[in-house]
Image (cartoon, rainbow, N blue to C red; front, side, top):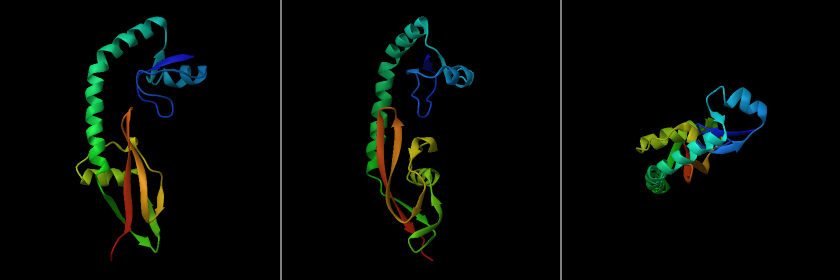
Length: 147
């Protein structure tokens, strides 16, 4: 079943992508939730026209995302956490990275940051998706809290 995505769907595609999914997934989840519509010939024509009109606006968004990406690459993020030796009491997740970015003046939604769950001190990398075409590797370091 071919569908046109109305919103970004994780592990499937981005808004306005035409993707093929299994019938049940499309009919029972994506379409009723408002994430997609059937890709009929008329819907594809409408999509093509909309994409033409959005091309210029899209380029400005990409340029803005690249500017933010350059600023993020130059950041040195240190996350302070309680630790016993090398092991953390608890863990560091995407939420902690987003809070550190907000402290540095960058507002990024948590769902666009991918780092995994970290339970040890050290240097790590997180992936930040600013746009479908702009993805940046964000280095960060976890340091022990001083008593």
